[in-house]
Length: 236
Ligand SMILES: NC(=O)c1ccc[n+]([C@@H]2O[C@H](COP(=O)([O-])OP(=O)(O)OC[C@H]3O[C@@H](n4cnc5c(N)ncnc54)[C@H](OP(=O)(O)O)[C@@H]3O)[C@@H](O)[C@H]2O)c1
Image 1 (tube, rainbow, N blue to C red):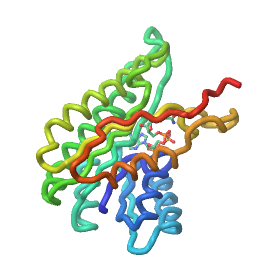
Image 2 (image 1 turned 90 degrees about the vertical axis):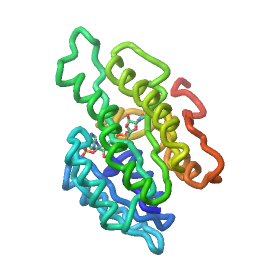
Image 3 (image 1 turned 180 degrees about the vertical axis):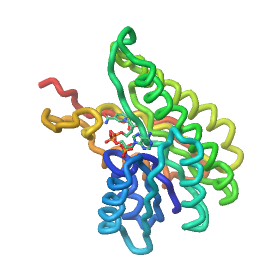
Image 4 (image 1 turned 135 degrees about the horizontal axis):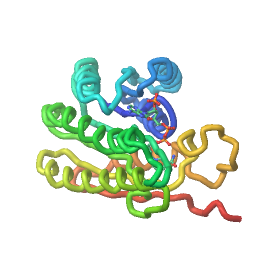
């Protein structure tokens, strides 16, 4: 398996890359911060299984040329591409009245347009490989909307719609498109300080397990949308 995980330098993306590398995959991760990408590659190589390899590229998914060249480089390094995981995402949670243009654009451009740029760049490689997967990490926030989540919820609802339309476009090319919608996951995304009790939340590994299950699915079957949430709520 030759895969590229956007936003693979920490959190859910790192866990997905780790599971793929443990299974012997050849994985490229991206993120904006070069130092963080380098540190993640080093960590991933330590736990990688036999035959695995891991590379990193600093690329912002909002930069169409940057993500395109990262995907081309990943395919060149590993002789092709089988799997794209559109995982890079950010959240700015603010009421619409007080949200700046830049905050709105950061969320929509990263979470939605970034997945478009990466998918468009990856499709020719996936076709050349005879098929593959695009897995989009959306969110239950793409279905369950909340106050101060207008930009984030809109970006994730857009990503769910994007996934389904893309799935219909590509299914006859042996390219399976699936959308994973996690609920709360304990990463720096929700609590950068890590001070709150996150023990009830999903972990990145739980989401990675869903992704690995998808990749193992028989060729005839396509779970095109998966919801995953903590078994219990955070309320005691
Ligand atoms: N945590 C949750 O509760 C939760 C729930 C449902 C869905 N999700 C979704 O899951 C995905 C991963 O979230 P997470 O919790 O793992 O977040 P995280 O821990 O903050 O990790 C986000 C990753 O994305 C990268 N990234 C952010 N903006 C980027 C950009 N413009 N270009 C390239 N890489 C970028 C980050 O690296 P740099 O900062 O170095 O760029 C990092 O590697 C997101 O799409 C998020 O919306 C999260």
